[in-house]
Length: 416
Ligand SMILES: Nc1ncnc2c1ncn2[C@@H]1O[C@H](COP(=O)(O)OP(=O)(O)OP(=O)(O)O)[C@@H](O)[C@H]1O
Ligand SMILES: [Mg+2]
Image 1 (cartoon, protein in one colour):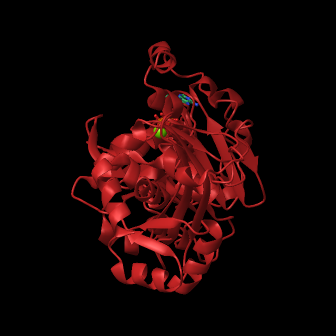
Image 2: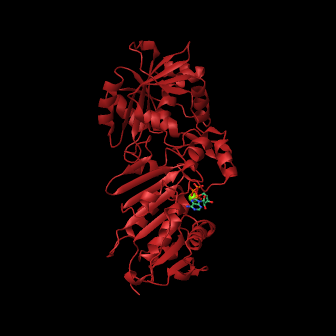
Image 3: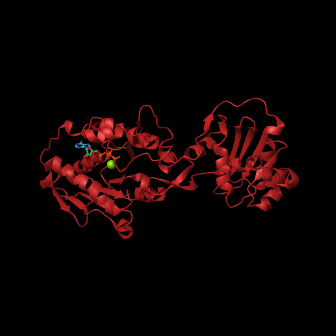
């Protein structure tokens, strides 16, 4: 039976939440459905792939862990089939987690990325994959998503689509960096030829129970509220340094208040330096400028530093004595920071007690501060272990070592 011979199926628009309806047949190569909890993302995508199968599309539905897939997407697609009274059109194989359309052989295949063997060999019964839907994509690495995207090669009469759905757990997540460069936050929708991004919240889901709605509206924790109620990229949960703001810098740069710190890096990690003015009496710390660059050899780095912090002592990551020696040979007053076993925690605690101000010309430092957080303990709490990019933050700790540690200040004076 060909598609044209399928009986006509009428599904009322009211089966869908209005916010999603325009995207039922969206053809963009990459489609991102993200936002708050209970906003109807999974239900919509489950309904869409059930209907897509009737038109011959083959969909691979993926989550990081197969076990979680069974109780979420696999169940949700079966619910969609029941909701549309399409039971006669599908054969459900519960052990293999597949749905097969009896009219055209199209399949919806569910796989966990932990099922490494299967994921390599999976092919639909008929034709090639037209869709990959990665549910809770924040659990999946960038490399794995790119690998999955490659599965969309091969001839097909259908446009190929990679669909990602998730809650925006952290602004530092690779998904945010990869797809959200041009996303207009206010509108919550971006539509281009090959990219669709839609943000939804519980307000977009009229099928949500009153209890769920109340729980989301009453959320007190600022991080959970931001991510799960408002559907915005999370940035405050477990944040380590929150005592900062972006503000125009002062014009004066009194010599005795100026500091500079440097964290070494080359290929993967950038070399990172900060220029700081510190008013000890007011505990006011200005980050006036930042330098963050990869692939700088030490001679080039020295040239940059001489312009960045002319004539100043540069307190450096002590793990590279050879680089420090080279910088000195090139005329930079470089000296090693003392990295004791508790120097990170001590330095951070000291920074937490200052009033930090960031000049607008320091976007990379701002990004690091936003995303530098305590590691989660898996039970809703945090461990005293920082995680996130910290090149400029390290440079800042080095720069301020003399101020945060009096004994160290004397050592620095002696060393110089
Ligand atoms: N069109 C719909 N018809 C019937 N029920 C729906 C519909 N859309 C959403 N729902 C119901 O609303 C509830 C929340 O929706 P869903 O699970 O899809 O949200 P979500 O955005 O995926 O949430 P989360 O971010 O927590 O995964 C579910 O119980 C779902 O079945
Ligand atoms: Mg969901």
